[in-house]
Length: 478
Image (tube, rainbow, N blue to C red; front, top):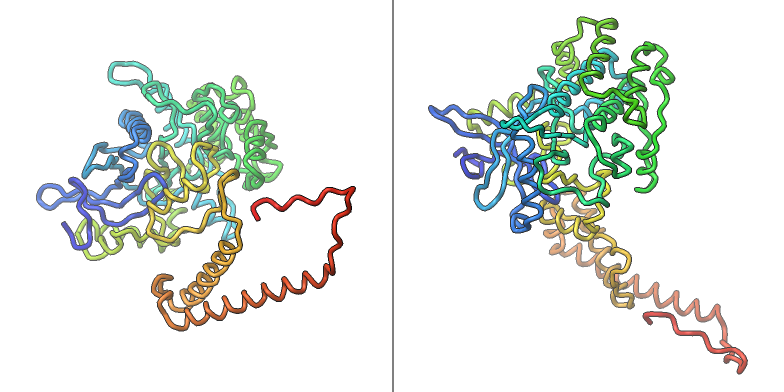
């Protein structure tokens, strides 16, 4: 085992590249014969969830689906098992970026997504969906796989120009044993089909709608509607309204307009009835527009946008294969730098759970529970979460003053952290931090006393209640 790596079954965990309330994602190495190693990704469930049978069953269900999928445009899963008391999946490591990162980089630069490349990405995704939709088990029984979460975050583009669909954690399949609760909508609402948002039965045509939304975003090059509360986002998904891409980009051919708008039909009976049909329409449009477009075109485009990140990832993989010092440099929990994203197969967490902040409508997990899961998954201090409605609070004066004092301590520590990079825990012991806290507490107390006296003087003498008026009730909690 190389210096700094963590042994996990027959794998060596090199650096953590993702974490959430349900699991962790690691860049890993699988040692082989004669010193030949393979770089992969290990996605594992958090230890404290391994005893929860419902989480384990959902994790196993995902493995049951992906183990049957072997396609060039679907990120491959090598193994699913248990090591050191933790369930895990080992998956293909893809050097590249998610389509979401690619879109964000172009918008930062004020550039538009090239129309031929948008069509090419759509063709490759439709290839993957067509394969998944018709896939059967070894006995010939259809699996009826529906991805249900196609979005730019779940589409990878490699530096070699490959396009791969990832994350079948939310997929529907005939072989899954754990069904989604009727009141739960899993997936990204911005790309969700109307029938899925309305909690109706779905088939492959739901995925066709979702990839059409992705294509509309790329071709019209207009951001999807966002904002609002959960109900407003759900309403936009359940009752969508799109205009033709050419309304935003006049150079879009009419044929492409018709193809995208057909795939976006709210009634699934009016859409393409299979992913192959949508793929063929996109292929015809690409042949007429730019027939020379290929994976090489996409590779050159991606490397031009992410030249530094591509070189960084190449060095990181080389060091991982060689067992060099950089391979285990951040193995004990440090996250990947924001400017150097490591794109991997598992964009979601075990069992289809989305990271915190996603648009999923999963009402089973309360806000305090999510905070506790996040704290368990990450060593970084989490913000205080407001209590849910109905939870008991402590309204007395002592609690308020204690909270104010704690906030003062956090402000002092945060100011010092910003200058020196030290941790909050270490700053609490520094003399000048305690002095500032003491001064703040004294100022707070004096301010409270002055405000109370001023308020009483402003009210003046209070007349006793008359016999015809009942006295006011005392405020609750006092």
